[in-house]
Picture (cartoon, rainbow, N blue to C red):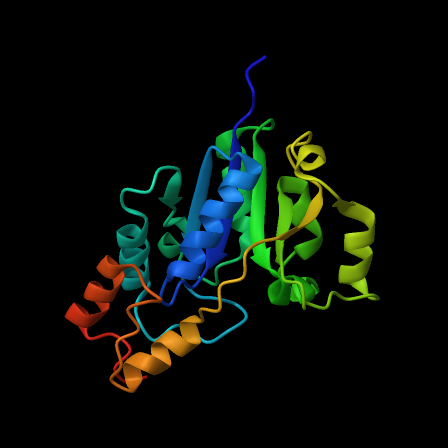
Length: 216
């Protein structure tokens, strides 16, 4: 039997995408031995203000950032929907496209995971994919409440166990910490600085060319 594909999926505003996103994606792709790591820019995020730059500009920056990096891709489907970007809708579509045997892994940070119970139809997410939480040594996870109960019911300890099923498990995966913040990058541009260490050069050039983040 052919080994089912392993696809890692990272949603976000990517406002802008930075080196921390890329390095974590490459590290997690290696940990999972994933066939593909896919960035999914959201159009209208439900849990934060709509970004100051357009969805198409954010998509363009992701495309520039991953160009020439094997196994990294971008999926613009949420930009085609003129509505709030709900993860459950995207996972249902992806499961339909990849079939029942593909291993789909939705990747998220600890902060987002702690508030997972505020997401639209959050109880259904594990029906379509695994959830991988990018853990930090200092991060505090909930010990009671719906998210704690989800963790207790579905957590596995190793990647090997996770990959035995196409969906339904939850893994805390510690990755190398990168102290890079999109908020700090936007602030640097507003102050007339050039945060070249934080951004891939093509993205830096794009921001400067289009004069993004100069005033918000």
